[in-house]
Length: 474
Image 1: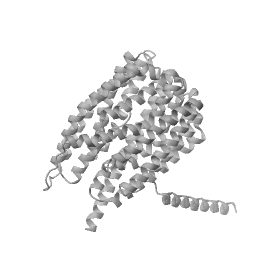
Image 2: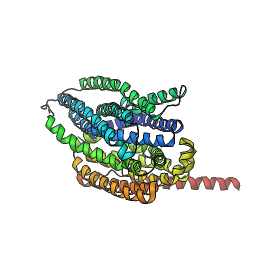
Image 3: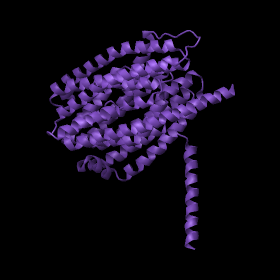
Image 4: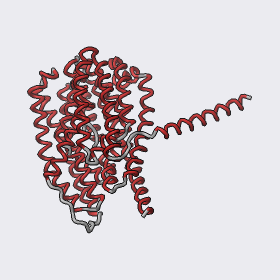
């Protein structure tokens, strides 16, 4: 029995290692192309239009979460659980039910985004020409939500190679490259406007959507055919059950995104678009610090549901804490130079104007370090059936961010907004970590002992090198 469990841990570890290699490579490409988009737009558009683009991108992403209706997490959970117990027919039933719900939710979410922007965008955010921009954003939501849902389903079958290429705010690295190509190509012919840039965004997402759907259909059919159906009765997922799970998941993801990104909305409603561009550019640089945690989430999401369904909580905690430690070390390596040279790095990437966001960037970095250090705590709650507890934390922090963010921004501008965001996000992450321990029974926070051992090893190596130099000098 112990040998079987040991072999199961080894198989899980090997699979996670293989997946992590693809996730790291693909996510590096994704972050690189996302930053490239920001660099191109910062040099093509004036700062005021850059601020509006970042605002529309934030609204687009939030609407995408609403449009997915929590299916990106629920489907990974249900399909992974059925695969974990070799219930092929149950996994197929979950996929069919999810597809029906996805069509309705994504269309409705896109329409709601259009209605909000068209009728309230100018009054709330001061954005002009919404008769053109609103339908383009809604069309982008349609493509983005579909692609992200397809990427999540691919992770259910542990296909990190394709899923990572489709994961990202604008549809992943493939879509980012298409977006960049269209934007840079247009610069050779004319100076693109904000409206034309949004056309490129919507077009790249819609062109990639059929490819994403085809990949999910092919991979699902191939992987399920390789699994031998167990003798246990098949579990058919009722639509009512799926709705009851998806609704709190959608609310949890939406509120989590609000806590993570509503500062852009607050800034868009209060400060000038030029100042918003400074703040949003600093937020984009935070992608580099938060990237290791994104890699961890993408790697372990399916394994959380599988290991918990199999009752292997010790293995789950070991994987989560090890992953969090690696992510924290990588994040600190990236964070240190940004904290020391924030203005110089911002100016080098986006242009001289954006060096003015140095103070904001330093403050935001603190919140990202806390976010990475606590590990995949929120994801653990969501994939373990504890989404209502995650929802309660997100509800509190969302309200707190709006209240403190509006107050701080009115009094201290974008610096006050950065302080409010950092404080609220740090409290939220700590709350998720504690709740994961109490509700699921696992710690997700990084292993401090590993860092202490690494520091001792570094001190030993440094001491030996110093002695070697002294001997050579003698």
